[in-house]
Image 1: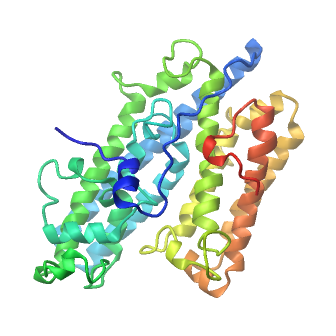
Image 2 (image 1 turned 60 degrees about the vertical axis):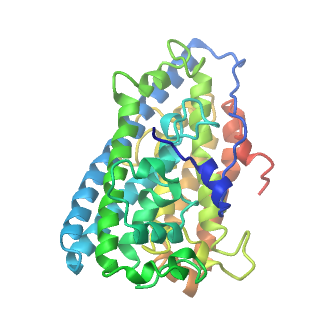
Amino acid sequence: MHHRFTRTHVALLALMFGACSTSNQPTSNTTTEHSEDTVALRREALTNIADNIIITQYADFSAKTSALTQATKAWNDAPDNAEKRAEAQQAWREAMASWQHAEVFQLGPAGIMTEVAGGEDLRDLIYSWPLSNACRVDQELAKNEFMQDGFFEAQLINIRGLDSLEYTLFYAEPENSCAPTSTVNSSGSWATIDNITERRASFSYALAQDIEKQAKTLEEHWTSADRDFRAEFVNAGTSSETYSTTQEALNALSDAMFYLEKETKDMKLAIPAGLSKCAETTCPEAIEHPYADFALEASLANHKAFQKLYLGNAPGEEEARGFDDLLIDLGQDELDAEIKRLLEEAIAAHEAVEGTFSEALAANPQQIIDVYDASQAVGRVLKTQFVSILDLEVPQRAEGDND
């Protein structure tokens, strides 16, 4: 029997940074009456977003995880080959960039089971940040049991996924990340590893295979005939068993978009920049991707994914139904223009940063603060006019946040 260990299990058992909420599943406005034309427009937007943004992104990520598996296999076959390791690292960057877009789509199967309608906790099996734990990865490296059948299904999420793979791919020091008193050190098990690079290459390959498996599962749960969450989403208010109205589905999507406000702005940007939960001028140890130094690219991908959901298409692509059309339908042309401007400014702030996230944080932290400020401006509109005019609800995790 396989046991699925979710982020709640990790928070309770490991007591780690960033423990997640297990509040009751949020509800949507189900009593608001909308005209048939408005409902039809909303269903068009939901269909376009499902087909051309969410499912398309999952397919892209799935393809990149296949390439990642092949790249890590090549390194596993030649662990002392620096070029093979560099190629695996690049494959990780490409897969991670794709997933950071999908991070903003945590509704349905990707969502938390106890909080999201249709949630299956699949996101946490792919990427468990901020519950990552390098020491736990090192402990499993020392045990050397990760190639056994069913290994990952029996493990906590903090030794799975893209974040654990980042550590095994990019961390090259001979030491581990555990305390001297940790069993892996006090028992001498770490010292018995003959070739740590070879061991990390092997674990990287195992991790990549599991990530590819979960990526395909997530895609299939949206598209396969026996699961078909797409039908649940686009048929909200008609044949859907998950969403009784189009408003509920739209609210689920809006809730997911608050990732930009709570995870990206409040955690990825504010904490390292010293603006929140940081006792020093800056807190570089809180950077999202400390080993690959990929945090700037991650935040940018989050903002671009939000922008794509809002527009219904990426800038420059053929226009398609999105939230902007819903606002324009309600006569909110000025608000629509403001949101578009704020999103463009937030993306431009990312692109203006010189060097990587950690380099900017060390040399000129104001550049990261500028990114935070631009993201905060988007969040203010999201929490106020955007949700109010579209009859949406602020998710519980964002309630009481008045910044």
